[in-house]
Image (cartoon, rainbow, N blue to C red):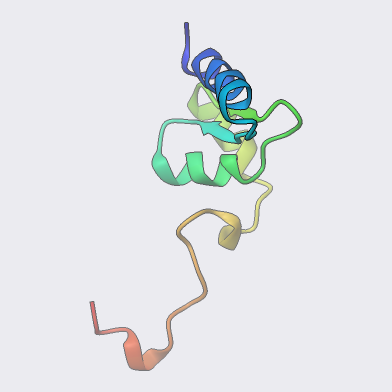
Length: 81
């Protein structure tokens, strides 16, 4: 069973046991997984098994659509952590 199949099984179990649907992104990194989770289709699972799939998914998105990338910090806060 690969990660995409595991995510699909999790979705079915969560729906059956809690009546709550889930959205799951399954790529290699946490930020890409969070970005994918926000953009899953009707299946509720977006599986990106290799770097080519990740690249194909991320390339058309604007940079701020990637989870964890927000607006630029103001100059007054750039040196504070």
